[in-house]
Length: 149
Image (cartoon, rainbow, N blue to C red; front, side, top):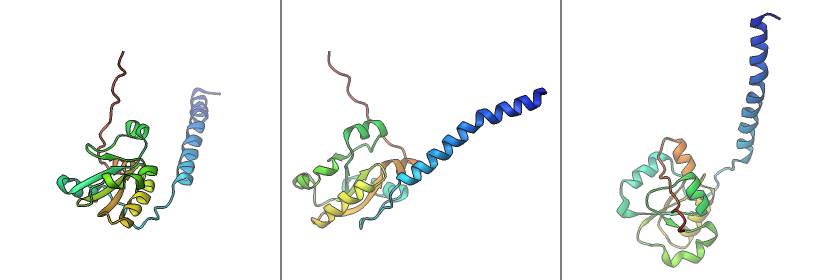
């Protein structure tokens, strides 16, 4: 074999696993994605940014686990109430402010928002932090405090 054919063969051989992996990941991601099915509107980055411009009127409730907040990032100011605890935390959530709930892709946020709306809260939307970032929004990375010695 001449050098050009060897190089082409080697390139094809090396590229094949990468192409398969990318195809497999795209299929896996599509398969794992769920359709948003809640009454509360799912907000785009632009819609959420408009609400963030009036922080004195807004309460952000992040329903993700602490490890998700630290690994993915979040928004500068929020009330952290895990999804399973929203109903038990109603007394701590302000009723006079607009509420946006947050999860990674808005699934848990939509469920929590619908629950809050059914209890009389002024819910204006749900947002996925990762969707927000994919649309060009910036998340705040949350650093864990260093353990004390």
